[in-house]
Image (cartoon, rainbow, N blue to C red; front, side, top):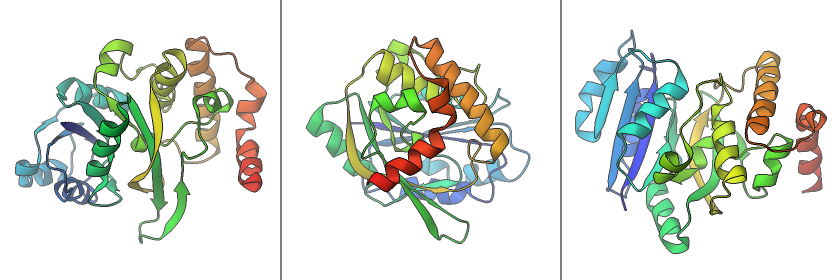
Length: 247
């Protein structure tokens, strides 16, 4: 089984090498690693060029944002499974891909959903973001599994479409809604902690971001014909606290 790992980046010279080395260190070797750079102005491309032996394909050109770059990566991919590794993240262990492959071979599913850990720049872990209690119905109240923990069969993108460029920070939510809720793909929770993610991403930066993603969650659900309560989505932070206390 071939696995396509896609990293999109822009001016990521401070972190991209760690990301590349994280892929290189994987025990599973049938990996095609794809990097889509948005025409970086720093030394990102130089670092990529220094590691060309570890990279299956890479491009550096202007794009229309994060999700446009992801779509380019998916178009370049030829693997059986597709996973996303952000340019300031690393795999949580050297056996992540081996573990994911074995899980998919065992259950013959279209997608697996796992966990990630979030950490500060000093490496201190501040959160385990688990999908253990997640199910597609929770998309209706504003909860999705961590995007980097999901491995999709590549043909899903051809059957059901790519990331929608009409979203600024919620195209991953819309795609997951379209795949899991609208088209009811087969999936299982893997229990694998796939990724160590540096906090401070595009969709986790303050109240303005919260308002925007709330708006885009509602848009994603509406587009896919999903009935939902706008109030529950706006109040999802409180449902999360209640769920945590119950557990």
